[in-house]
Image 1 (cartoon, rainbow, N blue to C red):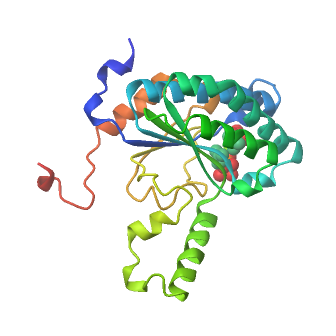
Image 2: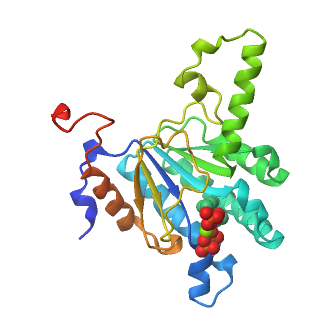
Length: 246
Ligand code: IPE
Ligand code: IPE
Ligand code: MG
């Protein structure tokens, strides 16, 4: 029986973020090339995105390529970029059918022109969709994002457009890559690694963390339901005492 029946649909995490890790190890364990691992990882992306739309999660943010991933072998980087283009081309129909809006965060200027063009195209085609916002973190690094934010705000202070005492959470949010990305409720990382790897440092301030040993290509909707159920059995106190929440 599916774990879906146990999920309380009134208490879904509004924003799920996933560090999709383990494609390489998945392939290696089967004696296959890392590229095959990435291809199978793309299949998992499709299943998880469709499932989130189906159960009415509002925001799903996927870590697809980090600023640090540029340091991988050139061939692997090229393959990941090609895979991204082909997946976007192939899945735009799925996004439309499921009323999913595509968005991105990251240093998009550093992406190959072909990738940037395809992304722009899909973002434009899906801009009026409103069931689920799917955000792909591409050439994304949280520290780089925070540096950008601090530079932009400093410049505004210097030009007297904003005064330092008025800098609050919303001012910071307004200078991040995506001004509308809400705080993360549930952060999932697959493959057994228990680290954040420079992902959404600002937005995960109060996220619940869920680490799964499953390698990303093997992660499926039941594993997602398991993570959501686990999340729903936690008490999010946000600094308060348990009694105060009653
Ligand atoms: C995640 O899988 C995909 C990306 C980081 C692009 P990995 O490629 O990191 O797989 P492992 O960690 O080597 O197994
Ligand atoms: C994090 O995975 C980045 C993505 C999932 C895109 P990595 O495999 O690059 O992370 P580290 O280097 O092992 O921390
Ligand atoms: Mg990895």
